Image (cartoon, rainbow, N blue to C red; front, top):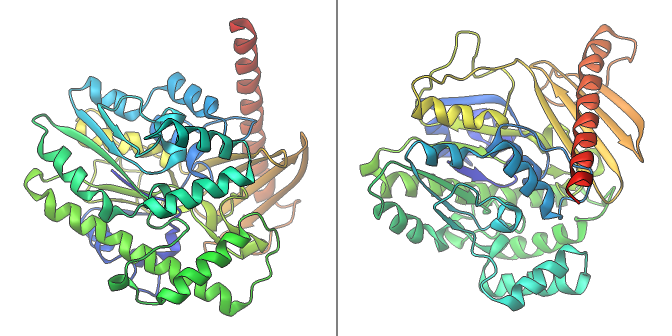
Length: 417
């Protein structure tokens, strides 16, 4: 299972992108299954992957940096690697993403979990202070990681030998999770893989991106946006080579690949850059989802139907358990919480429509409904339309469900104190 950080669906060749960014992923999609309407359960790594590995969206009303939420969610619902381990699979992970690390509980069920994190007590202190929004410690963390090429600066070519070494030492059936940060900011693409940018543009526009992380309505020209997209596309092209390397190195094991992005990335749409400001619009949650081989699906499921990444455990088990087949609801849910601004977001997505609601300071601030004629959110439809009313009834039931879950969590925490 290969996860790419911040990989948008509309920047993949098999999903219609005009650049040849993902030739190896495209080949997998042509030989297996390429879902065209896969949606992340949240717009940031921690809640998205917590939902993906458990099959249940994570619900929290606190800052994502607090590890107690994902730890609790993963422990309460159980994880895909825990299930596979119980079936006799050896489980391993190579994951330089700090927000899906053992610090956040993502090592549950893994026999081997390498997150390249906390090699010293001093760095653990730096990381903890970074999470508390210390500007100084954030700078120290980034500078340290840049020099050592760790975390967001760690490209796949720096640990693929470790992956191969682990696989060749296994004697049982294995499940392997690889998390690639190559497609995440900063986009550090080796020289031989830069097609649309240059070394100067790579460093300059990564610096510009860093300036935009916490900005709303960033002042970017069309030329600047294109250059940022250029370094992003180069990073995708380089990240895609990982799939080719894995296929070549692990050929004798004939593995099945399941590949997806954990969330998307904004490039100035709706005056937002990146994914640090929670958003459930398509650019932040529409992701690629590909299996390298055909899967057993029920008659009503097809690759163009909306499917949530929370179905990934079901997809994996359709290859490991003959009694499991993929089922689809025909619609998906995404949910996220902005702890900095007390914004709660919920989205309902069907094949041709989408509704997004936002609560600020506990009060419903707006609901937007879109007919997805071009697979993106353009002008919202009228609040008096039948489409709006139908989706709103589903969305509000989801909101009530989350409210009840939070109430139960609060009651349990009170009893446990």
